[in-house]
Length: 298
Image (cartoon, rainbow, N blue to C red; front, side, top):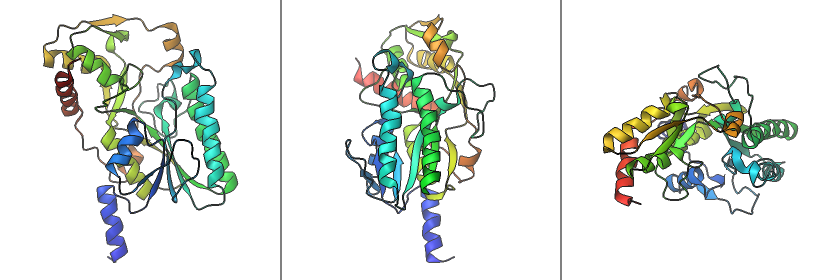
């Protein structure tokens, strides 16, 4: 094996690319952790800049939920579509590889589980629809101007987040915190909803492996591929902490039923083909969230 092949093999094993990566959205939960984890590779692009500073681009600028329509119906459109096109304009005529971070939300409600990259997409809600539209705009733009791309559809990303934890942002940690503190929580559909959770560190490593090894002009699911029932997870937290919290079954509000998905987990065959395996055990990480919640108290 030649020296170059040895080096590439090392990067494939460790998920450590030798290339510099222009990270758009490097201050968010996932982007911030990516920049910390790969600080020697990541170039954190300023919030107001649209100009990449390297060949590899990791684009994470996005809204995060379907509820912005009540406060600002233009926010999802401006953030998820207009800003994306402004950035793509700066990649035109370059050798950029545009790695776009999308979401499982683009699949919408489907009985075709686990959802693979070829599954039908039927998103509902402004966030979900604009993320799918962004994928389609990206593909069309890149094909028109001969720009290479990849699309990463992320599962539910979790981990310990010190700030901005809410039911809409890092909901798993938020609900676990509430139980540790002895407060009651509401569970839609009696907690029967299913999600695919992946730790933020594994998510970052998976994106790095994909940028180093995945085929170009492809969509790739990034998740654990393991379905977890939300109620089961919350019952585990309650029993582990001997909490007096009540897990209250409630009917989802009408808007939630219109735009949210009840069950989702991902087919990760493509990701596995890159020799990627998640390192973080889900239940061990729930224990860590419990421990930190106890330490932090209120």
